[in-house]
Length: 139
Image 1: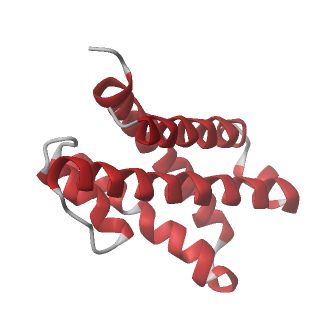
Image 2 (image 1 turned 45 degrees about the vertical axis):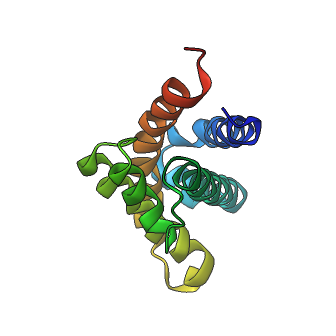
């Protein structure tokens, strides 16, 4: 396996671990603490960006494909047999949350954002396991 791909998966796992402490926090507590909310948002953005980059690297390595969008990086992995289609479609929605954080921040409803991040992080937990089993663990 490409050593850079392994590093990408390790970074992805690191961002997930950085985000994890915020997941058990009450939504109202996060809403009342700007620093913790900002940290949660930033770690989610970094994790999502790393996932899109990792997916693109896998798509190129396995299928010589370059996905058209962040969302499509998950769909391409489904087409290549790395992810189940239903799972890929669900986690692909995280691209919209990431984009809202980056591009439409002032319009965001923070409570919904927190709920969306928590929902998608559960999917990322499974996604990371899939990548580790497929690309990191020695066969």
